[in-house]
Image (cartoon, rainbow, N blue to C red; front, side):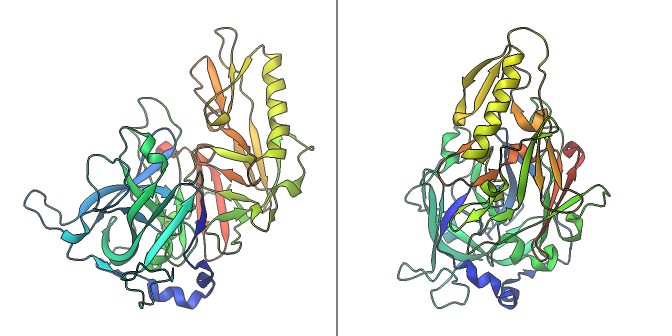
Length: 407
C-alpha cells in the first residue's frame, strides 16, 4: 500500500536525537530477530506477531497472535481493535481485545509520544490515508509486542475505523493490520533501534503453486539484515518532505538489454507532491509513470506481436498476452537502472515480470500510474532479490538471490 496522506508529523523525524526517546525497552537480551514471512495471495507478504498481555487458560502464551502486512510505505504499525466502527473481516481471530490486555496503555494528548498532535478529546489519535480513498484511523497506544522476543511499550495504532482496505476483498483474509517499516519516528524499525540500528531486509520468493508453503524466508533486522555477497549494488535512499516513503533515483529502463532512450530520466524525478520513484512492499505490482509506461508498453506489444500473441487487458489494467500455440513462452527481461555504485541495475527476470507463466495467457506485472506520475516498484518486481534498507546511512543495497533459501 502507498500512504498518500498522514497526520503524523514526520518532520520531527529529522530531529534524530528525539528518536532515541522512542527506543523500546527490551525484556530479552536477544539481538537477532528473524520473523518468518508468509504470504496471502500471490505477492502480499505478512508476519505473525503476538501482542498484549491477556492470560487465558486456553493458551500457553499471554499474548494474542495476528498477521500484519509488511509495508515499507507505512510509518506506523497498526491493527484492528475491538469496538471498531468499520472493520474488514479477518480470520481466524477477532479484532484485538484491548480492554482485556493488562499492558495496553492509550497515549494521552499531553504525552510526548503524541506526535500526531491529533485528539478525540480524550486520547491521542492517528489517521493514515492510502490510495483509492482507503484509510485507517484510531487511537495511539503503547503495548507489549512479541516478535522473536518481547518488546515493551511499542507505540502502535489501535484501528477503530478502516475504510475500503484492500484486505476486505479476500474472503479468506488473515491480515489484521500493518507492520509499518516506512521512515518515521513511530516506524517499527525506529522503535526497535537497539536491535535494528536502522536496518532491515527482505527477500521475497516467487509464487509457485504448491511450493511456497514449503520454503521459508525471513524479515531481518540490524547486522543480520546486511548481506555478505560481493555482487551487491547500492543506491541512495531519499527522504522527501514528510513522506514515509523510500525514494530512489531511477535513471532509465532497458528491454532485453537495450536501453529505452525514449524514456527520459526527468520523468522519474520528484516534483513537489508528484512524481518520484519509491520501493514499496505494500503494493503487489509496479505502477510506472504514464509517459514511461507508454514507451514500455509499445515495446512489449511489438515483441509479442512478432510471436503471434494476442493482446488483452487484465486485472489492474495490466497488459496480458495469449500465445497462439502450445510452445513454451518466450519472455523478455526488463532492467531498472538506478543511480549508484557500479551502475546499480535490477534485472527483472520472467517470474518477476509476468504472472501466470504456466498458463496460455501471461500478464505484465506493471501498469500505468496516470494520477500523479509516481513510479511505485511493488512486491512482485522485488522477488528473488535481497534488499537491505539502511535508514541511518540513507542507503539501499540489493543483489539477486534465491529467496526460497533465505530461511
